[in-house]
Every structure is written in structure tokens, then in C-alpha cells.
Image (cartoon, rainbow, N blue to C red; front, side, top):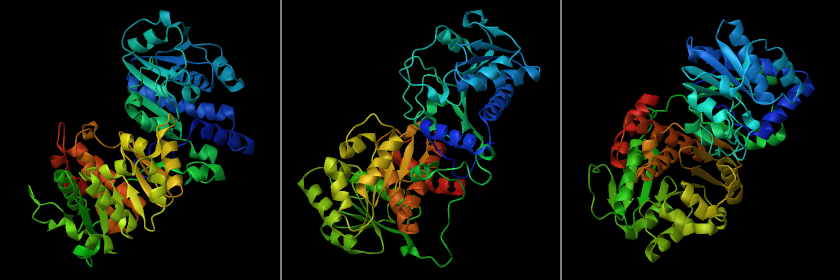
Length: 479
């Protein structure tokens, strides 16, 4: 089952295995039944993709290989031209049983004739690591395929971090089995088109729950961002429903981009402090001199954004100190994050008011140090270290981390977002949604969705200015 809306759970490899063990212990399913279910889902997608072409199933020695044998059996029963390439003997009882039920052809990789075939990658699954060595014959088999469908995870990929082995060829499509894994978002391009086989009934007697969770897993609460329409203002709303003040600095163009992002994301009233030379269609923006920023910082109704184009000179540090010392709701981006540096956790947790920070990977490292841990784990740890701060950890996979460690993630944006100024637009959108909703986590999610959709509508090679102009259309598109 593929659900276009709603939060889909994201679990680590260890959590997925723990969920399976509890399901087996409770009697709600068995290892063999679950393998049958997984293999059937893979077979259905392989058949739809193949459209009469040959199908070669690469079956590894573990549970993923068992899923592959099941898929091959169903495909053969349906009349498809399916064969198996076995990479080692099945190491577990359920996988061995599924291998014994396969009555079709089992070939070596060298015996597979090159041509138009679909390769089902059931080699390693979530047990694989980027440090694994490619089995003999695998590269040729993989390179010769016309289409590659991965069962759960492309081989050579770490399910938790998305790290790829040098030999990992990725997949054209991946069937996520049971639940999404972090790598499905962290290495989305290598996974190709993502299909989700939801096994909720096999894990839990309550069909509206994605799977049974222990207290430890509920503490993680990793999920994709929910879809659904974006809310319009109420008939009783007025312009002060969403007031955003942006503090400009050394590079005022970045602050203007943030202002455009705020207006496009639904802010009713945007003030730009310190921009002496308005450029472009910004007549709706209220301009104020920099020496009265105390007005913005003392206003309990609005949200203050500081960082886009702020600079890193002494005057920038003074502005940042004033902002941090205030009781204003702050969105910190760009230079403000770099100025915080490795002292970020202490300074942010000491604030008496809520804060949202919007770092890209480089800024995140400057704030919390570098690490080889997954982006999900690092974002969650940063949330714990900063207390009441919401973190919008930007990138190809953008993660919104909420106080308490709840994480939601999205890969909905265009790769053309990798251009200067698009982060400034997002920061403005985050501030606008927070000013309108009053919910920092929800604001981050809504802004990311709007930003991502606008990037897809803008087409290729767009500028940040163009991106901001597409935000209202993105709102309409999501509505």
C-alpha cells in the first residue's frame, strides 16, 4: 500500500528488527509469513515494471534473499520469465525454507545473458553496510540490467546513514518494506523512485497505527512530513496575524530575499530593518532604520528573523547579542549561526523564548561539531542539547527537529535549490509560517513544503528571486 498523505514512520535497521522480533513473540505474525508478504510486494512491483521483460532476482544469503526467492516464485507462478542468481547459501531457517520452495532456474551471474532485463536486488537489504565487498559477478549483473528494483535497500547502502559503497549502483526504484529507513531520504537519489509497502496489519492489530512501538521507539518519532492542503487566513484575520521583522546587515540583498520569502509564505506584515536601498518589487515591505531594531525585539506579537546577509563583523555580533538577550521569538539563519559557533547549544538553551535555527550541513557542523552519525541522529542530539529550539536542518533531505526529539523529513524539493539565496527565502518562509501559526515545528514543516513545491514549479536553473515569486503559486498548488 502506498499512502500519498500522512506521516510515514522512519525507523533504523535495529528498530525494524526489534519490531519484527516483538511481532513474532506476540504471535501476530511469523518470520515466514512476513517474508511471504515482503516477497509478494516486491513481485507485484517487479511485474508491473517488467511489462513482459525478463526478470532476474539476485538473492543474498540473509532475510532479504529470502524475500527475493518468494518474489521469484510468485513471478514464475504468474507466468513471468523469472530466474534467480544465488549469492551464497541461505543462512537462516525462513530464508532457507523460501529457497527450497523455488523450483525455477537458478543461474550464475555469468550465465545471465546481457539484454533487456529487470534486476531485483535482494542481496543484502538493511543488514548491508557501505564497507561490504561486492560479491563476485554482482557489478556485471547490475550494470547489464535495463532496470534495477531494490528490495528494501539498494545493496551497498547503509540503511541508517545513507552511506554508499563505491560499488553501489543504486536503483531505479526501491520498495521500502514495512517502514521507511533513514537512507531512503538521506540517499534518495540512489534509491530512485520510492515505493512503500506498509505492513501495518502484520505488526499491529490496530490498522490505523503504522506499527507497534515500544517506549524507546516512541521517543524517536521519526516520520515524513504530512501532506494535505495549506491553510488560508480566516475571514476574521487582519494584517497583524503574521508579523515578521527582518534585521538586515552587511549584505542587504539576502535580507530582501528573506522578506520576499516571508510575503510569499503568507505573512501579513513584513518589516525590514536596516536596508537603506530597496531594490525590486518590495513596496509592500515596511522599511525601518537599523537603529530602532529594539522595536522589533520588544514586540511580543511578531517573529524576528536575523542572519541572512547579517555579516560577521562587530556590529553583526552586537545585533545578534541583542536578539538573543530579548524575549522575542527568533529565527536564526546564515551568519547568525556561524557567529554562534560551537557555543550554540549553550547560548540557545539559555534563551527565555522559543527559537528556530535553519542551518545547512556546514553551519550545522560549525554549531554542533562534525560526525559520521546519520543526519537524523545528529539532528535529534542537537535538539536535546538546545532545549526548546526547533531545528530546520536543510539539505537534499531537510529534517525538522522539534524539542523533545520528534523529527520529520522531506526530500520534496528540486536539486536546483543548490543555488545562492534559496536558504534566505526559506528562512523568511519559516518566520512567516511561525508568525501565522504560533507553532514552531508546524511552521518549519509548512515552510519546507512550500519552498520545495515552489522549487519544482520554478523549473530548471532558477534564481532565488524567481523561487520567491513562485511561493504563492506553490501555496495554491498545495491547497
